[in-house]
Structures are given as C-alpha cells and as structure tokens.
Image 1: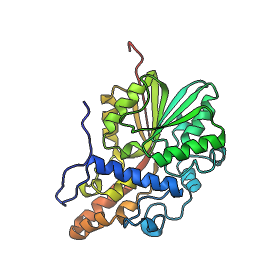
Image 2: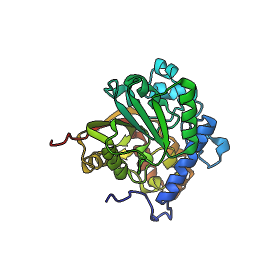
Image 3: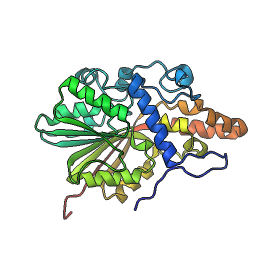
Image 4: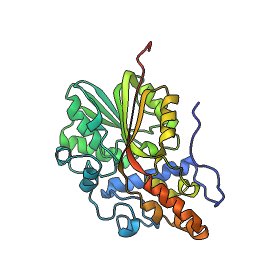
Length: 303
C-alpha cells in the first residue's frame, strides 16, 4: 500500500490543502487552459482575469510555441501537430529522448491536448498505438478533437486519473509524462500504476520539474504555487521509482525552469512579510528548480 504524499494537515502558518482540494485545483487550472489555450500559470491573485499578465509572474506574454521551443521542442515538431495541441504546458520533450520503434504502444500520463501523443504516434507508425490519459474532461474533449482534425487513427484519449489508470496490465512498451507527476497527490501510486501498465522490459521517460533543494513548507502548501508547478526532490523521485520496482533509474537536471510565480504568490509573500529571514530560503529554492528527465526500466521476468 502506497501512502499519499498530499499536504493535508495544517502547518504552523495555518495553511492546509488536502488531496481532494489539490486535485480540484489542478483540474480547474487545466480546464481553463483547455478552454482558453492560455499556457500561463494560476493567476497570482486568484483572479482569472489576470492570468498571463506580468502579475502572474510565470510566463507573462510568452506563446505556447515560445515556451515549447525553450524546453526542447523544435519548430518542425510544433508544425507537425494539429493546431491547438500544443498548449505550452510541458517542461521538457520526453518523446525526443525515447527510443521508439514502429509497432510499439505508448501510454501518456496527463496527456493534455495531445501534443506528445501525436509526436509519439508518428514514431510508432500506423501499426503502433498511443493512449493518452487525462483527468480533465475539457482536455480529453480537446485532445479527441485534435486527433480527428489531424487524422491520427492510432491515438486514443481516455478520461481517468493517473493514480488509477484506465488501462489493462502490461499494455504499454513506453510510459511518458510531461510536467504532470509533480502535480499528483500520490506520486508513488502513479509509478506503481505505470509499472502495472508496462510490459516486462518496458520503460518510462518522464519530463518533470526537479530540485535538489528542500521546499519551504509554506510554499508546499500553497494552491497558487502548486498549480503553477512545484518540483519534486531528486532523491524522492529516485526512491519512489525504486520502491515501485523500477531499475536503471536515472534523474537528470536539464534546463533551469523559470518559477518566479512562486515569489509572486500572495500566500508566500505574506509569510515573508511576517518572517523576512525566510525570503532568502524561497529565492534559493526558486533558483534550484530545473526541468528534468527521469528514466527507468521495468525488469524482464526472471531478471
């Protein structure tokens, strides 16, 4: 049994965010992204009217293509997917690093509007298969529309939570995910589900935010910072993958990821106002955040 790592008890600042609230906050943010095409983070003041503004402190006026270019996609990849599939919500390019072969099956955890699924679909060819899973109905509807628009017959999208994947055992050769597992209230459960869904010898390639710095407690429990994306400590990722049974575990820091939205978070600012000495702690944490690549393998039977 995997215990939830949700922040569900009050800390000394009186803040609290349980697993249900965490999931609802994430779903709300990504439903808005699906409806508006806005790649920016949660509005700093909680007002959707300010999303994408300088006050948001996240991506300001950057377009989805500009964000994707900065994290590892090239213009050719962006041109090959249906318009509206790239929302600029990732933190890396897991498909580019995957050794995909024609005929393989790929499972995308938190597939959004389908960007990575469509890139993977080209690599596995018509004899292969790509399954995207997302918990936000608006995203699944958008992804299905994008698949029809692009004529991707070998891609399907399913509504479900990545902690309880709506797929049978041993269905996939590769599990990918892009800046999603950091949002889960129970990452060990997600990795256990990935292990279940993979065939023996299958692998995972995950792009996610990582850090080797401890997260301040009042940042960890902030709704605005959470949905704007918070990193996972590298040691935690390594331990969680090993606990799920994966081998060949590798967690690499890649490009520095802009996370200034954390500094603009009113909840974080309020704590710093009360305790100015903690400002340096938050700055050090923000500077420690990178887009990372996490890879691992499911052992073959008998290994």
